Amino acid sequence: MLTGIWRECFLLAWESFRAGSIPVGAVLVGPDGAVVSRGRNRFNEPDGPPGEVAGSRIAHAEVNALATLAPGDYREHVLYSTLEPCLLCSAALRFSHIGTVRFAAEDPFWTGMDRVPDASENIARRWTRREGPLDSPLRTLGAVLPLISSVERGAGLVIDCHERQMPEILRLAERLVGEPAARLRTLTLDQAAAEILGGSAAS
Image (cartoon, rainbow, N blue to C red; front, side, top):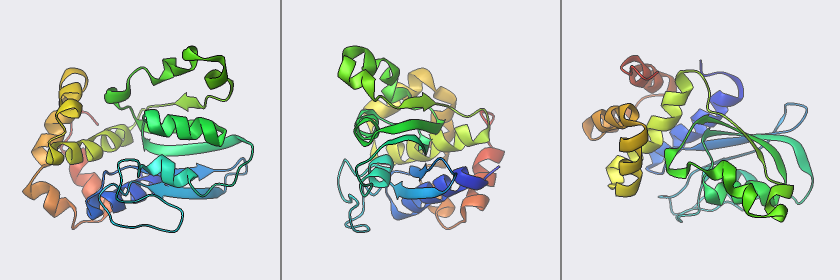
């Protein structure tokens, strides 16, 4: 299940989860399949690698994967992300001229992002093609990890949105908050994924 580029993405998300940041990871791949850059969320961390954003609301995984990318034409590149890009990350993809983004799980908080190009011909001109979510258990894992963080932080708007659109994922996240989450953070990604997905009807 956790293999290839998706494994790299989720390992990055897992690093964020264990560090107390929002668990999202992203990997940019070139047309030859080689990894060009990586990034993870560093929302709740004081610093990060040179050129990346940390300790800020804009310290998103996709932003950090693109932050050190030299200006150029990346239409044949694909950014893989564990979670559907938000407005900020979608704009970063467009400004970086990335051709495609593939995400493991949808984010109902950002439903409607596919309509943003309709606002302007210039936005649409280099708008990144969106592919996702996955039809696999990784969809559940990609959705529930950041939702655990949202429940821990009491992010009411995010919680309410998931209550309306993805209640089964919210119930799973709520069961994992507190002591279960603290114990999960002591495990490897593979161990934690087996526990989370083994107890989820949504997977």
